[in-house]
Each structure stands twice: as C-alpha cells, then as structure tokens.
Image 1 (cartoon, rainbow, N blue to C red):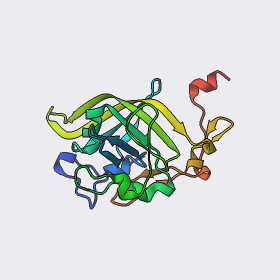
Image 2 (spheres, rainbow, N blue to C red; image 1 turned 90 degrees about the vertical axis):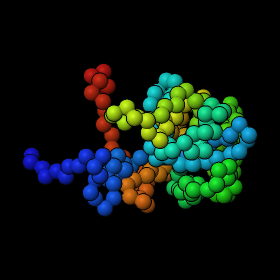
Image 3 (cartoon, rainbow, N blue to C red; image 1 turned 90 degrees about the horizontal axis):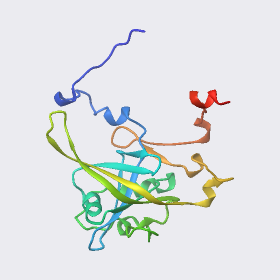
Length: 211
C-alpha cells in the first residue's frame, strides 16, 4: 500500500505546529516520583518518559530533562517511590509538575499526604492506590548519536516493595481498568484514561503452542 509520508530530521526541526514525538509515543504511563533529599526535603513530580524495564527483579525507570530535584534527591539517597496516577489524582499530579523554587514541598502545595515507606525513607503518596518503593540501581546521563552529553538523565531503580489497594485485587488478580490509571499524550494538555470497554485479548504464539 502506497502512503504519503511527512519526513523530517529532528536536528533540523519538525516544521509542525507542535512536536509530534510525544503524541506518537503515546499514551505514555506516568512516573509520579516521590523522593527526599539527604536533608529531609520532600519532592513529588510526574515524568511521562517512564516505564518498566525488567521483570525479575522488577526495574523501573524515568528520564528527566534537566537535573531536577527528583534526580538530585535520588542520587543523594539512592531511593525513590513511584506512585500510580489515577483519574481522581490527575489534577494533583498535574499541579505537582509546576516549576517551583528548589526545596519546595509538592506534598504541601498539592494537599497530598506523605506516607512513610516500609523499606525506603522517601515518602509515598497516601492517596495513590499503588506505590512502588525503589532503590537506585543505575543513573545515566544521556548522549546523542555523536557522543555529546545531553542535559537528560535516566534513573533506574529496583522495586523492593509493592503496595496495592486490596479493592483492586479480585481473586488475587490486579484489575487494571478498575484503578482508572491515566496516561499522558501529545500536546500541552492531552491525557487519556483506560476503560474495560477498550480491552481486547491476544494470546502470544508461544502460549498457543502449549494448549
């Protein structure tokens, strides 16, 4: 099938009203990261460049454009928490992305409740139904294809404790849509939700061979 394609080289600019990258790689799960500095200053910030990168042990990671408070805190303490952003928490998560002075406490600014972790000192968001306590495994400064260092930082951490609201477990199975997670999309304001009506099931080829 023949397609007309719009082609551009990112280094030369995209030539469109808005950079399409975030809209193409979408919707993206949100890394709502809580951390604490060595001096005990709390921080909470959402990152849409986030995902899971290993199953056992579980490794999750997020990328920060600039060495922000989250990155500095995690490098100081080696700990952080990921908190699930749900539809009821979307506005608070968005508010926690505001540019505020260094050391400002987003828990206080958003009215959210810090909850002590069981294995890490970084606080959890009490209102979030799922929290992952994490310990730093790697941090990488990103580079471009020419090897030049960028002001982008990849943080990877092992999930050492998982907390799940039991209302989201039915016969021991986690119900993704019941949690009402939200995801970031393209443009300055687009978010998406998930519903059971959007679900479809596919069985992997290897699993079909075993049946």
